[in-house]
Length: 319
Image (cartoon, rainbow, N blue to C red; front, side, top):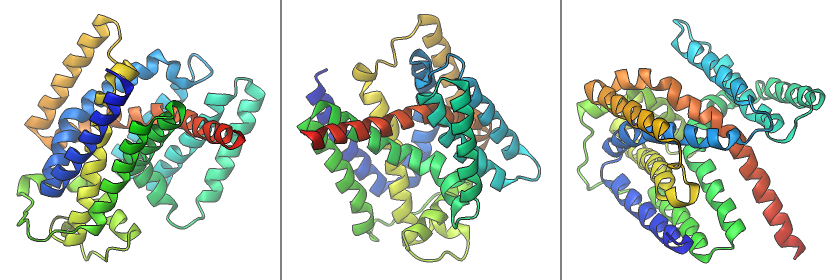
């Protein structure tokens, strides 16, 4: 598929995701997270493995794997230490700079030590937990990093269709906050509320971030206009994040892996979807490690994208 055709397809996917998010945001999110999500985790991890996870060392990914294991352990402890969980995420992201750019162990220790110092400083800042523990592995990962990755591709290609696609993304995003229909007679089912409840804290924090009002309890995420506004945005961000990945198969070539690995991927995916169908909350618990592992392993790629954007913008300014 030609690059321009991929960008046009991408624009169509953005618009379609936007329309569906307006109509059935909770159901759309739950379907995408339970069906598209596991396939995305598995194929992206496999693809990153082919790229050596964008790190300097062959086994650098082990550090991120261990960090993810620590996070999972903290999450399933009887008494959760949310502050430490935020530190693990923030430190892993910042330390990825060393994994991407530095090979010498002396300089690596220096960069990683600086990352630890920065995390210690951030601990004393307002809203640190919200941004590090709630936004970073969710909305920042699926929306902001996806948008920046798109922007990086546009700068490299100098692509007009790509730029149009990016503008469409920004316009559709803004529509969720400027258009707030109350006449859809939309009611969130009991099943959807029960299945989504674990994510409701994200909605509450985003409602506060965008100053859409104060909720008296978490259940208002499912009944208030502010709750619907934010849910439309979240559903759109996640669905587009997944579909964007699969729409660029011919470019990313994540499917070009050994046949045995591809078969294992499909088997694990089918089992994962089966767990969500059996009991959505059971699926969330079983797939928790895999969902966060792909976030951790993508940190180096995020750093590479930031660096690439900086280089491309710098080159443009010099012209």
